[in-house]
Image (cartoon, rainbow over all chains, first blue to last red; front, side, top):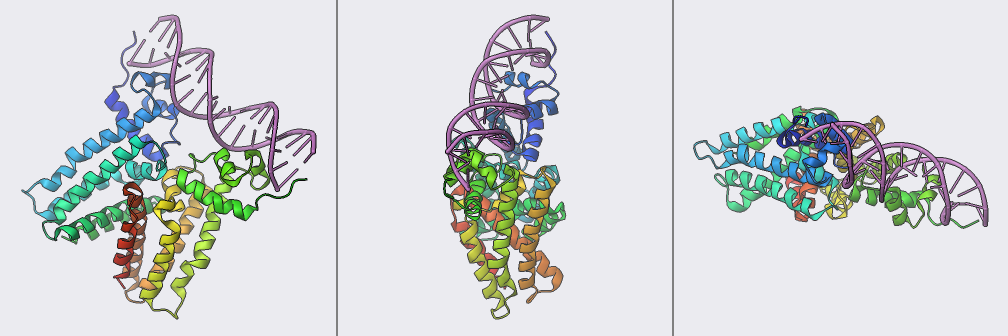
Amino acid sequence: MPRQKITTPEIIGIAINVFRNNGYHGTSMAKLAEACGLMKGSFYNHFSSKEDILLVTIRSLNDYLNERIFKIAYDNALKPKDRMKKILNKLSNVLRSDQGGCLVGNMTLELYNGHNEFRQILEKYFQDWLNAFTTIFAEKYKNKRAEKLARLSIQEFEGAIMMGRIFKDDELLSETIDTITSRL
Amino acid sequence: MPRQKITTPEIIGIAINVFRNNGYHGTSMAKLAEACGLMKGSFYNHFSSKEDILLVTIRSLNDYLNERIFKIAYDNALKPKDRMKKILNKLSNVLRSDQGGCLVGNMTLELYNGHNEFRQILEKYFQDWLNAFTTIFAEKYKNKRAEKLARLSIQEFEGAIMMGRIFKDDELLSETIDTITSRL
DNA sequence: GTCTATATCAAGATAGAC
DNA sequence: GTCTATCTTGATATAGAC
């Protein structure tokens, strides 16, 4: 019996990048397998289907962001502005358009009419993000206003990734980070 | 010989909606054909390939926006704020997320690694949009600042469409229109 | 757990009748 | 210009050996 070449969590880490660079339909099992150094048949020992891979991958990304990044929004040891700055810088490392951008943003546009299970996890992702930003803005603004600024800031961030992709320019993201933090 | 069921421009009008609702890979020739009331084989009398359909469709949308909407940015008879308001309202009618959102935004994320001809027309689309907004903002702000605000406003608009799609809420777009016009 | 087949199906595209 | 029928390819997924 051959030894294990790659673990499931390692596959997930690679799959995130393949999916966000090529889209869901643009990613074939063969392409995924090649990126992992496996034959495509071997994949079904780790996942039940291609759809399953994407779901597990998005959930994993959602968990990562919550535990490593959005969590900072609730850290009272830091000033609101510093919390926001820290979050945005970490996000820009993870979601830079030269790395394929935001997997969830991409999937939102590609799989809008797709499976319900997708919508559910995509919506949760944005909701967690909104909650984090709203919490920070709420320290300086009234609730309604804080919610509005949180929404607007995420729109700007996702828009920056999209336009950065077109113009091959990640400077946009830096500009947007300044714009958002200047509100605090 | 059977009479013509549908003209090429009519097909393009339908294809815009099919593509932006289902994405490029999610749109099959069969789906396109059904939406047009044709058999999929009949399509090759109007276009040479599926890729060709998307290219023609995006070019057609680009022309439409330039002639009918972005043109308003250069109408000196109107005040800058009114020009912007008019453009944004027209754009929101055309790009509402409940209609599938912005075809070009969707394609940008799905076809990033794709054919070069795509990138070219997608980039032109955003450039025309940027030029229009920059022209308007330049009447109140210095050049650099006007460019920056134009970029930011488009980011916000595309982001609003994306989030509106997730939360099934086009109220976001109205809010964003207010945010953008308030800068003038 | 990974591999080499292979089954199955859907997609883009073409040919030729009308 | 549209149709029916068909070709060809590439994709997801499965079966069984190692």
